[in-house]
Amino acid sequence: MSNRHDQERARQDASAYRVENPRSIRALAHPARLAIIDALATGEELTATQCAQLTGLSPSATAYHLKLLERYGLAEPAPPRPDRRERPWRATGRQIQADLDISAPAGASAAAAVVAAHIDMTRAIAVEFTAAGHAEPEQWRDAAALTNADLWLTADECQRVGRELAAVIAPYRRRTRPAGTRQVRVMTGVVPRRSTRPEPGPPPA
Image (cartoon, rainbow, N blue to C red; front, side, top):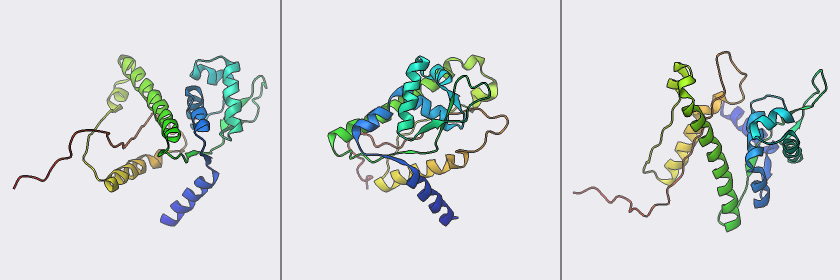
């Protein structure tokens, strides 16, 4: 099992689009491009007009973003539809792997822009669902969960928690769409606080 997992990880790493230039990662962190990447990652094939409904831009502006994603190897034209009126696009299956030096100001700033863009997208999804909660079926209202936890962890424990959270959602990635399912945003984050509070001392004797 471990060997098969290692082989799959190696295959994904080999096909990943590696970004080392802070300017490139900032370009990919554009909200419209992230929205398109998210939509195509579900396996759907969408036209520029359909993507425009997600981005809030015109179809021509959205087509520009699709072309840029094609240049990065993250999107590609799909087979034409029967009416051939507008060509659809699909994901290539490549993942973005950012190899930024966050010890340098430019790399740290670019990484922060990516984090902010992803958090903003997830926040918008959560707020939209909550605001329309009265119109959602009860089982979906009960299914939604937003949790926060401040923990005292060592660096090793911090990494382990991140791996364990990723392992929980791994079986649900890239599976076919079973009946009764809907697209659900799951965001995990394990981020040390930059806090001025002192760390707890030893317990009293």
